[in-house]
Length: 115
Length: 112
Image (cartoon, rainbow over all chains, first blue to last red; front, side):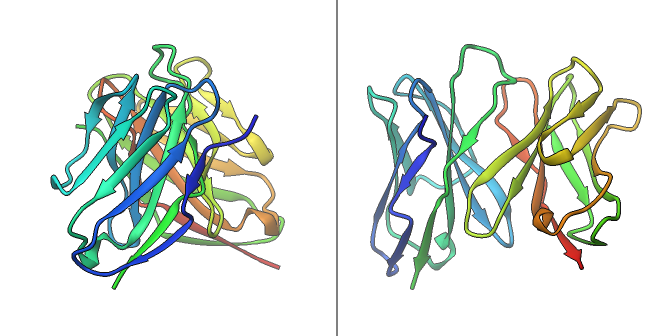
């Protein structure tokens, strides 16, 4: 089975622009979560989607948004980029049969640099 | 709210020596606990997880961790370090309906 794929892998934007990142989960996985990883703050949860519905949201400003499509693929969008948004954005998917202990499988991430 | 503390942001061991990475958690309900590893320029890979079955959990690449409720700990060990173990290791806790919470990570260096 193919793993979680994220596109693009690297991205350079300037302040004020917006960006859209894409995540394709493992086939059959219905839940997708997004995380931001920075050297200072570590790994922080952004949001989780299941069956096209946002199930959980982290403590990020409204400039960060996401969505999930009927095929479980997910996108996240960051509008009005700030320098502090430079980070590695990780997507994770899980099969989600209702058990909380199910493993999240991570993609390689998209590294965003905001200049 | 749950939290994870990883003691030591950087641990250095000699090749062949014991690896011990410490993780303490805080949770108001019985937790699920995970250890992930991240190699440079890659995502996170699951090493092992605790789901309230056996308290000693064996994972991939010779790693294991022991859940100790009385100490609220879930330390990761490996008897003999290999050069390929050099990476960043993250402990994470999942409890209740809240999302996965990660520790700050411990970077493991292995010296030849």
